[in-house]
Length: 166
Image: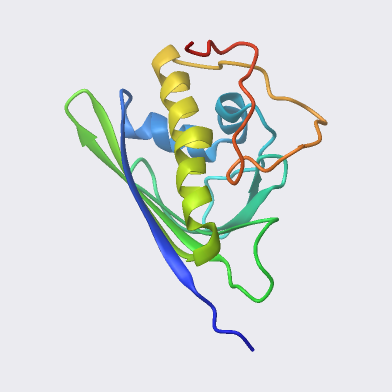
């Protein structure tokens, strides 16, 4: 049996919003769908199972501290066979003018670290910044939509409502 190889993704991002607003956007299914544009069954209950990106991401909430910390067991539909779920830890800290989110995504299959690292930025942090800056929904969730590609491992196509710099 081949040896399993893991990596870690560490990121820090600043949001111009209160820690509670960031926390709620990540765990409330409607808000999550609003900023990602894709169905989610997220929950703010410890032990609850969740899905995001129309089932591409799934897992379970391990620890939740309102407005401060989210710890989840996490994987995608592209997870290599034989690999256990990863551990995602998000720590929210109030800073002047907003919130610093520190992400530690551990036990990620080594072959997926680079793609998921850029996917977190492109598919979560950038649209979440935009959503929070506008104070609410950016686009309605896309219902009953089939994914042509996964949101974290491949670039997403620009949405019609987003301007693309020349």
